[in-house]
Image 1 (cartoon, rainbow, N blue to C red):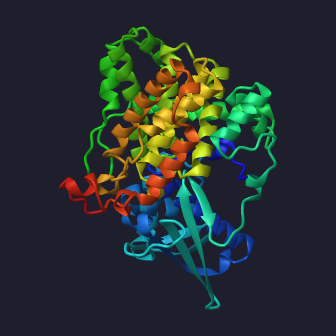
Image 2: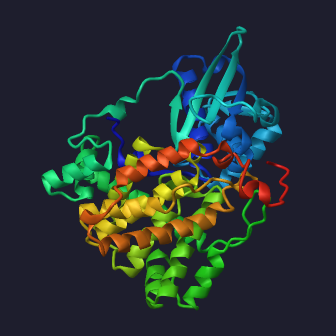
Length: 473
């Protein structure tokens, strides 16, 4: 069984896409690191990057070219100052040079040296990219990487990551495995996950890491609710979270995140008010994501707003602002994401948007249900309900940008997660006709049957029916 950590599913990165931005960024990093380790970095004289399939077709809209240049430069997406992205890319373009791995400068012109092979696709995965480097002695090498969703990267020909073959006390491949361990031990889902995380690091480190994940989510939400203007890319989409936040607060004072939460709570708890806030939280995150902001891949960037929005709902309206509850929520959600990745996919290029918004909604539904006192079976039921009503959801981004319909879909995924949780909490799972494993298999079957037009290629759906021309896509 593949061993995945919660931190494999919940990653800190940069928008707008985990598979088209974060993945290629990591691939470029790995390539230059391998050159350095082989003693070949300073022998390089030229470099060419080839993008295949979905990476080629929506690469510009997803900022794939930008991510690759930053990765080749040796920058890390977790720490790089996102405010400096434009300046760095402009500098590379003006100088027509790039400093590989931050150490060795070569000639590089992104307009010529990054090729978009729109009609070519490699068999292993639609998101493929190859690096071809030439050396002083006239020899050359090439390496191919696949961005398989959620920021995961696989190099062609490499074996399994040793870290993923760690022996866990509670190995889990399917939802039935997770339920088995819960029933056998009497532990909650989050407790089982924590025991597995202990195979990689101490419990204190895991808890601190989960709280760092939540800190990035909070900062992203807060920043998105206080940033106005138009999103980049040419669609001229106006940010909405700023105005909605301002309208809902009605002038109530606050000065930071904590006082913001107090101000939100003081507005009451009627249905429409809560519904508006959940939408606001999700909009804020994905508007930041679309602006190359720092987000948490959960399990992807395109779906990064669902889990923060549902967790913020829990914090603001369910008295859930305790570290223990937040950690339990995230651990539970991450395990569900892991099960979906193993049994199906979390890549829209493989499965459409059901693999992104659908999975994130299922993750959030399970996390919320555990924190609301639900049983282990009710948590899995909540995840099943959430995914069942996302089956077949296509990925058809207009202009190849993670904006329309992606941003609004996060609000829908968040609301469905809360509804799924409520349904599960008011139900007896023993009488459920559909299991989570059955839904995961159905999702994968649906993905295999789905036309490539609806798998993040911008070749179908809204992407071709909305008459908008973008010169960069």
